[in-house]
Length: 241
Image (cartoon, rainbow, N blue to C red; front, side, top):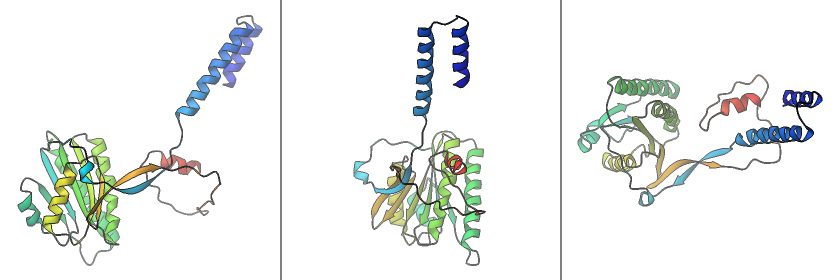
């Protein structure tokens, strides 16, 4: 803006602009700057599990040419049981090794899911493909919800894919899981779903108001932090901070 004002001043000095024309130009420049300032900003939001009844869901459905189910340490369900209920679906069952730590298991499952999705796409499929990852909701297994990030990235990069992560009772039986899989396949827009005491919840973003009070900085010098995204631009904000 400074250079633009200098140019206007020089044009006035040389008689190229009248005072009125110069004022009009300055006014236009200020309005453009204000528009740019208001066009961008920071949206603060947090993740909230909202109870969403299937009764109020839209009836819009999508026809899939392929449906894939990845069972992540669901001990109460055998692959053949789900296959009997959903014969047209392809199933990958990921089971734990008692000798492996939670970190090793997470890494193994992430690689397995990545390879599985890559193999699906390498066959150059036609039509829509739906992938559901099912995870138990106990204290340790809930860490596997991080696989949702991998699934979302795959769907962003490949429009033919839709995906869901379903968090449910780790001891669920095949019949109950079948119903959850079927009802959520009809609502592919809900990417993160969980069930607690037979209530269906969907993870939503809710805007929060920024406080006028400066919070205490939680970081320490020379600390090491893992930055994850979700709304876009989070890494940049942390860098600026």
